[in-house]
Length: 541
Image (cartoon, rainbow, N blue to C red):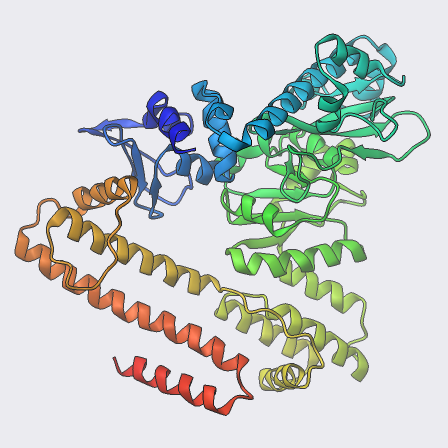
């Protein structure tokens, strides 16, 4: 794929790609703008048209057009490659070697799905009863119908098959697109069609039954294009609002998403036909750290929130819950009642841990010993996933007050639970402050490399210096921005100071890793002593 990447780079100037997302202004030979991640107060995002690279000094991110689209869109490299290839008019299958057959199969599936979507949209416009159902019973405006490309699948056995066959598609191609049932007929019949749309177009459908009979919703099965563990419904329509307002709302149903967008809360998305996965949350965390869950307050909603907290700890996500639906069962019903109430609900969110602790309390008798025992066990499991040490201390004090005990009592119980096997040992999670330290180490390393490569400082530090051309270009931007006016002696002093800080942070990081290993080998005396000696030596340095 290297040839394909070079062809795309040649056709798409970096300033044109970045300029689709942020406003750039000329600053000498470079261009400057505000960070699309909203973390700078003054323009700190630099683009070098000459080198085809970018660097965001406020977040220490950088790279070429592919890394930019991956970061700003929250998508994988393959998705970014396909998106930019489409913009550049590059046919990837010409570069895919042994994957040509798969690439061709995906291309035909995409074409079949795009054509089927237009067909379903056309069928909707020709059916007055269905239009009334969509606009009156479902409450959609014509603008919403167009934005989400709502359609209608005729209630006949092979209407879509006949249409696609007339356009040159085979049944095998239709099956690869997820459009056929197990009997070889149309999968979707007599249903309102809501397409799954990603950065490259239609990849599948969720279909709501209109008359009685059959499951209420029917989704496209897993295909070469559609993976329910990755796909986020509404994200294609929500990305711009999420970037601008720096938060996302995760609702339970696809209709909740559509109603929310129509009501002016365009940051809403949903997972489709599956519980939220780490892949879903990771994609969203690339766009914003502020994730608000709009789940039901029933047992399923509590479990879903618990799972989200467990995943969020690894990703540095600030998780909160929207729960005031004014008596409605979900956002869609609330919006049908009064859109303004949903807009207010989105602003009145609570930290997810607070919400969960209150839910636990509602279901247990904290005036009884058994209730306190169960509450403390559940709370201690949950608090292991609260990544920030100060925040975790706050919740420990809160739980202790509720149970009329001390924080030390909670720690003692936690230790006994872990050592006795009475509670499942939870995986260690990277805390936010640890991630900050890792980011600092990376930034110090980059700065040292910039001074070595572009400042002529001798590499007496034993660093592995990059040979990647894109990275070298990015490091030149770092050097030019901060060190270009320094003399050789000043550069060497700066490098020595940075390396001293770098070594301290690397030692701290190593101690953190060793401490985690120490917990895992408590029964191995020899290994324990070996680790303790290494920790002691690192503390002396």
